[in-house]
Image (cartoon, rainbow over all chains, first blue to last red; front, side, top):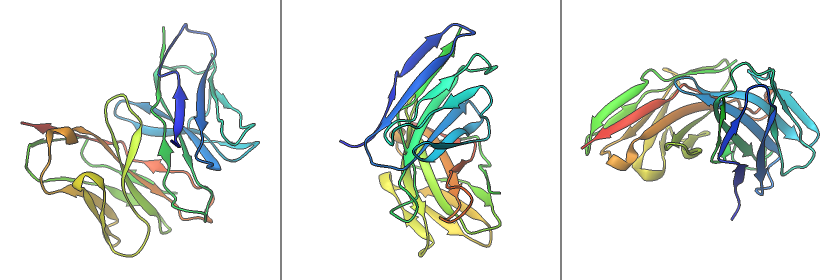
Length: 115
Length: 116
Protein backbone atom coordinates (compact mmCIF):
# COMPACT_ATOMS: atom_id res chain seq x y z
CA UNK A 1 0.00 0.00 0.00
CA UNK A 2 1.20 3.52 -0.78
CA UNK A 3 1.60 5.98 2.02
CA UNK A 4 3.82 8.03 4.29
CA UNK A 5 5.74 6.36 7.08
CA UNK A 6 7.06 8.30 10.04
CA UNK A 7 9.31 6.68 12.57
CA UNK A 8 9.50 6.30 15.43
CA UNK A 9 6.00 7.00 16.73
CA UNK A 10 7.34 8.05 20.15
CA UNK A 11 10.78 9.48 20.82
CA UNK A 12 12.42 10.55 24.05
CA UNK A 13 15.63 12.54 24.16
CA UNK A 14 17.68 14.37 26.73
CA UNK A 15 17.93 18.13 26.53
CA UNK A 16 20.86 19.28 24.42
CA UNK A 17 20.90 16.25 22.11
CA UNK A 18 20.16 16.40 18.41
CA UNK A 19 17.53 13.98 17.18
CA UNK A 20 16.43 12.98 13.65
CA UNK A 21 12.86 12.11 12.72
CA UNK A 22 12.35 9.89 9.72
CA UNK A 23 9.79 10.42 6.95
CA UNK A 24 9.52 8.12 3.93
CA UNK A 25 6.88 8.10 1.20
CA UNK A 26 6.18 5.68 -1.64
CA UNK A 27 3.53 7.80 -3.34
CA UNK A 28 5.97 9.21 -5.91
CA UNK A 29 5.17 12.70 -4.65
CA UNK A 30 7.51 15.55 -5.46
CA UNK A 31 6.71 17.86 -2.54
CA UNK A 32 7.24 17.03 1.13
CA UNK A 33 6.57 19.04 4.27
CA UNK A 34 7.26 19.03 8.00
CA UNK A 35 4.74 20.51 10.41
CA UNK A 36 4.88 20.97 14.15
CA UNK A 37 1.68 20.65 16.20
CA UNK A 38 1.19 22.11 19.67
CA UNK A 39 -2.11 22.17 21.59
CA UNK A 40 -4.25 25.14 20.59
CA UNK A 41 -1.85 26.31 17.87
CA UNK A 42 -2.79 24.14 14.95
CA UNK A 43 -0.09 23.09 12.53
CA UNK A 44 2.92 25.28 11.83
CA UNK A 45 5.19 24.71 8.86
CA UNK A 46 8.84 24.01 9.67
CA UNK A 47 10.37 23.19 6.26
CA UNK A 48 9.17 22.10 2.85
CA UNK A 49 10.75 20.71 -0.28
CA UNK A 50 9.27 20.79 -3.76
CA UNK A 51 12.01 18.81 -5.52
CA UNK A 52 15.04 16.72 -4.64
CA UNK A 53 18.07 18.64 -3.34
CA UNK A 54 15.99 21.77 -2.72
CA UNK A 55 14.11 22.91 0.37
CA UNK A 56 12.80 26.12 1.90
CA UNK A 57 12.24 27.38 5.43
CA UNK A 58 8.72 27.55 6.70
CA UNK A 59 7.38 29.76 9.46
CA UNK A 60 9.31 28.20 12.38
CA UNK A 61 12.55 26.82 10.92
CA UNK A 62 14.89 28.01 13.69
CA UNK A 63 16.49 25.10 15.50
CA UNK A 64 15.60 22.58 12.78
CA UNK A 65 17.39 21.23 9.71
CA UNK A 66 16.36 18.98 6.81
CA UNK A 67 17.80 17.22 3.78
CA UNK A 68 16.21 15.93 0.58
CA UNK A 69 18.73 13.64 -1.08
CA UNK A 70 16.10 11.23 -2.36
CA UNK A 71 12.57 11.83 -3.61
CA UNK A 72 11.20 9.33 -1.09
CA UNK A 73 12.86 10.68 2.03
CA UNK A 74 12.73 13.96 3.96
CA UNK A 75 14.32 13.58 7.42
CA UNK A 76 14.01 16.32 10.02
CA UNK A 77 16.73 16.99 12.59
CA UNK A 78 15.74 18.77 15.78
CA UNK A 79 18.91 20.43 17.02
CA UNK A 80 19.91 21.54 20.48
CA UNK A 81 19.26 25.11 19.32
CA UNK A 82 15.50 24.49 19.31
CA UNK A 83 14.29 26.07 22.55
CA UNK A 84 11.16 24.01 23.10
CA UNK A 85 11.32 20.85 21.00
CA UNK A 86 8.67 18.78 22.79
CA UNK A 87 5.79 18.51 20.31
CA UNK A 88 3.96 16.31 17.81
CA UNK A 89 5.67 16.36 14.40
CA UNK A 90 3.81 15.59 11.19
CA UNK A 91 5.27 14.87 7.78
CA UNK A 92 3.22 15.33 4.62
CA UNK A 93 3.62 15.03 0.87
CA UNK A 94 1.78 16.18 -2.24
CA UNK A 95 1.95 15.58 -5.97
CA UNK A 96 3.70 18.06 -8.22
CA UNK A 97 1.70 21.03 -9.48
CA UNK A 98 -0.56 20.27 -12.41
CA UNK A 99 -0.31 16.50 -12.11
CA UNK A 100 -3.25 15.91 -9.82
CA UNK A 101 -5.12 17.11 -6.76
CA UNK A 102 -3.38 19.71 -4.60
CA UNK A 103 -4.17 18.06 -1.28
CA UNK A 104 -1.44 16.87 1.06
CA UNK A 105 -1.25 13.38 2.54
CA UNK A 106 0.00 12.96 6.10
CA UNK A 107 1.98 10.41 8.06
CA UNK A 108 0.91 9.21 11.51
CA UNK A 109 3.23 11.59 13.33
CA UNK A 110 6.11 11.37 15.78
CA UNK A 111 5.66 12.55 19.34
CA UNK A 112 8.96 13.92 20.59
CA UNK A 113 9.50 14.45 24.30
CA UNK A 114 12.65 16.13 25.53
CA UNK A 115 13.48 15.64 29.18
CA UNK B 1 -0.58 36.05 2.10
CA UNK B 2 -3.32 33.68 3.13
CA UNK B 3 -4.71 33.02 6.60
CA UNK B 4 -7.38 30.79 8.12
CA UNK B 5 -9.58 31.44 11.15
CA UNK B 6 -11.51 28.72 12.93
CA UNK B 7 -13.74 30.63 15.26
CA UNK B 8 -14.54 27.83 17.69
CA UNK B 9 -11.80 25.97 19.55
CA UNK B 10 -14.27 23.42 20.87
CA UNK B 11 -17.81 22.43 19.85
CA UNK B 12 -19.77 20.14 22.19
CA UNK B 13 -22.78 18.43 20.65
CA UNK B 14 -25.09 15.56 21.51
CA UNK B 15 -25.13 12.40 19.45
CA UNK B 16 -27.50 12.51 16.43
CA UNK B 17 -27.65 16.32 16.53
CA UNK B 18 -26.51 18.44 13.57
CA UNK B 19 -23.22 20.32 13.74
CA UNK B 20 -21.48 23.14 11.91
CA UNK B 21 -17.78 23.91 12.28
CA UNK B 22 -16.90 27.37 11.06
CA UNK B 23 -13.96 28.38 8.90
CA UNK B 24 -13.15 31.78 7.42
CA UNK B 25 -10.17 32.56 5.26
CA UNK B 26 -8.34 35.61 4.03
CA UNK B 27 -6.62 35.76 0.66
CA UNK B 28 -5.99 38.25 -2.12
CA UNK B 29 -6.08 35.44 -4.70
CA UNK B 30 -8.35 32.48 -5.28
CA UNK B 31 -7.50 29.49 -3.11
CA UNK B 32 -8.15 25.81 -2.75
CA UNK B 33 -9.91 24.88 0.50
CA UNK B 34 -9.71 21.72 2.58
CA UNK B 35 -11.05 20.12 5.73
CA UNK B 36 -8.96 17.51 7.53
CA UNK B 37 -9.81 15.34 10.56
CA UNK B 38 -7.36 14.19 13.21
CA UNK B 39 -8.07 11.43 15.71
CA UNK B 40 -5.96 11.36 18.91
CA UNK B 41 -2.27 10.70 18.33
CA UNK B 42 -2.76 10.19 14.62
CA UNK B 43 -2.01 12.07 11.43
CA UNK B 44 -4.49 14.13 9.42
CA UNK B 45 -6.98 12.56 7.04
CA UNK B 46 -8.60 14.52 4.22
CA UNK B 47 -12.37 14.91 4.69
CA UNK B 48 -13.14 17.00 1.61
CA UNK B 49 -11.78 19.66 -0.69
CA UNK B 50 -13.01 22.56 -2.82
CA UNK B 51 -11.06 23.32 -5.96
CA UNK B 52 -13.66 24.88 -8.27
CA UNK B 53 -17.20 24.35 -9.58
CA UNK B 54 -20.12 23.51 -7.32
CA UNK B 55 -19.91 25.36 -4.03
CA UNK B 56 -21.37 22.43 -2.07
CA UNK B 57 -18.77 19.75 -1.55
CA UNK B 58 -19.46 16.31 -0.13
CA UNK B 59 -16.82 14.35 1.71
CA UNK B 60 -16.30 11.16 3.63
CA UNK B 61 -18.19 10.09 6.77
CA UNK B 62 -21.30 12.11 5.79
CA UNK B 63 -19.65 15.53 6.04
CA UNK B 64 -20.19 18.35 3.58
CA UNK B 65 -18.97 21.92 3.26
CA UNK B 66 -20.14 24.99 1.42
CA UNK B 67 -17.82 27.51 -0.19
CA UNK B 68 -19.08 31.07 0.09
CA UNK B 69 -16.84 33.46 -1.81
CA UNK B 70 -18.58 36.66 -0.72
CA UNK B 71 -18.25 35.73 2.94
CA UNK B 72 -14.87 34.03 2.46
CA UNK B 73 -16.14 31.04 4.40
CA UNK B 74 -15.95 27.27 4.09
CA UNK B 75 -18.07 25.88 6.93
CA UNK B 76 -18.22 22.14 7.59
CA UNK B 77 -21.56 20.48 8.36
CA UNK B 78 -22.99 17.12 9.27
CA UNK B 79 -26.74 16.56 9.74
CA UNK B 80 -26.38 13.89 12.44
CA UNK B 81 -23.17 13.20 14.35
CA UNK B 82 -21.96 9.98 15.95
CA UNK B 83 -19.73 9.37 18.94
CA UNK B 84 -17.05 8.25 16.48
CA UNK B 85 -16.95 11.76 14.97
CA UNK B 86 -15.22 13.04 18.10
CA UNK B 87 -11.92 14.38 16.80
CA UNK B 88 -10.11 17.60 15.93
CA UNK B 89 -11.00 19.21 12.61
CA UNK B 90 -8.70 21.50 10.67
CA UNK B 91 -9.56 23.89 7.89
CA UNK B 92 -6.76 24.68 5.43
CA UNK B 93 -6.14 26.80 2.35
CA UNK B 94 -3.60 26.64 -0.42
CA UNK B 95 -2.89 29.01 -3.29
CA UNK B 96 -3.53 27.63 -6.75
CA UNK B 97 -0.61 26.25 -8.73
CA UNK B 98 1.65 28.91 -10.09
CA UNK B 99 1.72 30.81 -6.83
CA UNK B 100 4.88 31.46 -4.87
CA UNK B 101 4.52 28.25 -2.88
CA UNK B 102 2.18 25.31 -2.70
CA UNK B 103 2.19 24.97 1.05
CA UNK B 104 -0.98 24.40 3.07
CA UNK B 105 -1.94 27.00 5.67
CA UNK B 106 -3.94 25.64 8.57
CA UNK B 107 -6.39 27.06 11.08
CA UNK B 108 -5.91 26.35 14.77
CA UNK B 109 -8.41 23.51 14.77
CA UNK B 110 -11.83 22.80 16.30
CA UNK B 111 -12.33 19.95 18.72
CA UNK B 112 -15.70 18.30 18.06
CA UNK B 113 -16.82 16.58 21.26
CA UNK B 114 -19.84 14.34 20.71
CA UNK B 115 -21.69 13.38 23.88
CA UNK B 116 -24.15 10.49 24.29
